[in-house]
Figure 1 (cartoon, rainbow, N blue to C red):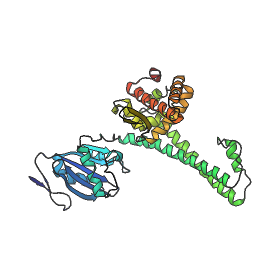
Figure 2 (figure 1 turned 90 degrees about the vertical axis):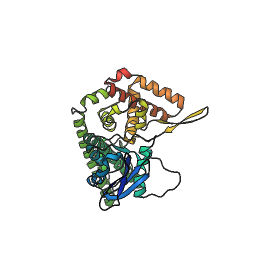
Figure 3 (figure 1 turned 180 degrees about the vertical axis):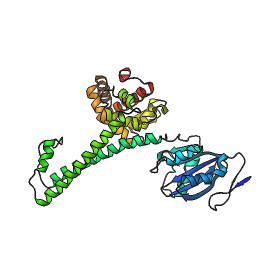
Figure 4 (figure 1 turned 120 degrees about the vertical axis):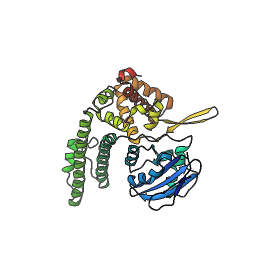
Length: 360
C-alpha cells in the first residue's frame, strides 16, 4: 500500500496498487463536499472544503493516477468546475439529478450523503452518460436566447396584471386590448379614473413600456447573433421549414447545441421533452403523456412553432389531422407534430439538407 496525504490536515487516504477511484462532488456556491469511492472498498473518504476548483484539484493530485472519473450533479453553479477539471486532464461527468437513482421512501439528505450518490452510479453498468457540457461560447449564446424568453414572460405577466386590475375595479377594456394594439394601450392611458387608480395603472403601463423596450433590445441582439458566422448558415437552413422563424431557429440552435452528439431521432425527442411515455405489460401497450424530462424551453417553442407550421405546410397539416383522428386529443396531435419537427430539424442540421428533402 502507498499512503497519500489528503488536504488540510485530513486523515490519510490509502490506495492499493491498481485501485480505480471515482470522485463524487456535491457542488455549492461556497463549499464542495467530496467523496472518494472505489468498486473494491466502497466509500474510501469524504471531506468538505471551500468551493474552489483549484483546492479540489490540489487535494486530488496525490491520487490522480487512480482516478477514473470525477462526477457531480448538474446545478445552478454551471459547468465551470467541469471545464477546469477537464483542462487539467481529468475525466468529468455531469449528471442530471433526475438520472441518479434514489431509494423509495423518505431518506435523510445531507451534503455528505449527496456527494456519495453520483460516484457509485457512474461506476455502475447502467450509468447515465451525463449532460453534454457546452463550450463557454455555446453557453453564452444560450444565455442570450434564454434572457429574451425571460423578458417575454415578464411582458406577459405585466399584461395579465393590467387586465386583472381592470377586472377587479370594474373598468371596461378599451377596444383592441385582446391584441394589445397601439390604440388600446393609448385608451388605457386616457381612461378617466380616481387619482389612486390612475397612479397604479400608470405604473403598470410604465412597467410594460420598460419590458417591451428590453424585449426589443434583446431581440435585436439575437438577430445580430443569428447573422454572425457561427449561425448564419444554420439559421438559413432551418428557416426552409415552414413556420420556423429566426427566433425559433436560434432557440433550437442554442438549446440543442452540438447536434452531432445524438445518434438517433428518439434521443432528440427525449432531449426536447417530446418523447411519449409508454406503458407495456404482456400484450397490452398504452401510450402515456409526454415524459417532460428534457428541455422545457425547447419543448414550448417547438409546440408553438408547430401551430404555425400546420397552417403553412399542407404535409404537416395532414400529419396533424391524422394524429388528431387517431388520438382524439388536440394536445397529443400537436405534440406529435412538434416531435416530428424537432427530429426533422436535427436531421437537416446533421445532413446539411434543406426541409424539402424531409417533407412528410
